[in-house]
Length: 94
Image (tube, rainbow, N blue to C red; front, side):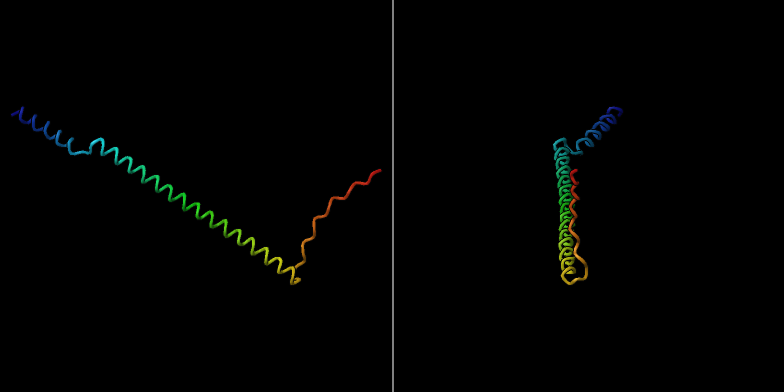
């Protein structure tokens, strides 16, 4: 009876071991997970790039609109044009 119980335990252990995934299945799962993570990272980076491009475009459009509004204000004499930068005075020779 003792041998039969030992055989039963060994059989149960072998059965449990056989039910698990094989090394090939584990490797395929690892590769699939790494591909999924890489795709997720690429999507996040693309979204960040899209956002930064959108912000840069909006800033550029605002700069252009401000410049046009400034020129219109000068034409309507609402503000005075900026004075040109003065040249540094030349030193007199002795």
